[in-house]
Length: 505
Image (cartoon, rainbow, N blue to C red; front, side, top):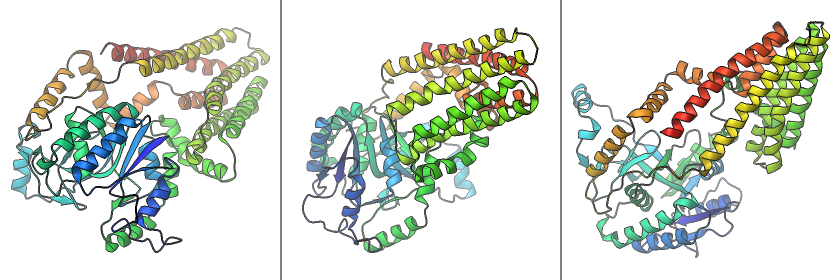
């Protein structure tokens, strides 16, 4: 469950702007009514906080955060948002995630561009920006993955470039910090200006408390806070031109898949997943299809005949396709379960090992001798060790202490100079030794060729199934097993080295 907090709305009758009506929707609901209907699946009794009195609103938010036993989703009551965007934000694995919008870069003269280029950000002067974007003051500095600094009407920030739009997701682990921050902000409410947005103030406090606030943009979905009927009409017009279902379907595909899966499976498997979901197929049923195809592929390989080997290669490819589809159906249809996760993880290994057995049997049946079983057992043993290392490292990571806190800054500090200096020192410290090497390797991933090379070298399941399908269909079982053992050994050495370095960093 997620505890939802609606800001700016009250338990009583709706008034503008939340009382504005969406005439194009059935029943012409108000903005507030539509938003409440959207979040009922998250929290049937959301907390409503009136935002007329800033200090009172902050104290009320602190009370909700203190009593929360689950994650919090805080959103202004005047929000027009896609259901899918709510889902994506609330399912984030970040401790704190804020929806932001970057300020469009102004067109600079050649002289201005040259002057800005020669002033590094760590040497730039903090400012209190009077620029506005989407009706909000531009007083946040956002990096690629998190908010670096936030200012207010009386707190300067270095090179502000974004606004905090509104929706904020806070994990249960960070709820106590949110409560503490809101109480401190309430005590100094007189230090803020009338144009300071409540959500931006909350993020201002969290960042200065050393909380890593992740960022995400709207991407292919829509969000806007409306203050007039004209704003609402424009929002409805824009939303009607966005295919929310396509965004939901694209989100059902893992973003961190390997090269083969990304370019040779996920380009079309998502549409199979949607077709299956709309016809009521469950993820577990799709998993059974994948298992059946894997067993049939093993039976084809066991014949040792070239036509059947080719058919086995085709079948093992489609076994992997449906292995991807079951997860995509689960994410698209929102059907998750412990049984499904267990089946998927367990029978992925079953399919591989039964195919190994089929290949070995086919080699022996063809009269090539039984020494192939040594390679088959080597492939099975290597893959078993790799999976053991994968699961144990994942468990160890989940049990490890939370990430180190970012530098803090007193809420009363007039600007973020000290925070920027502390972040710069932290950056230098983390660029030395093993951490420095890991950081360099991480930065190298910005190059597309390096990114995909790193994905492929670990020999993920997509590449493994592709290697089996291609080598078995075109060559023979010995070549298949040699490919699996050699590539698997390289992958194991690379992965183990990386995990040792991360453990020591």
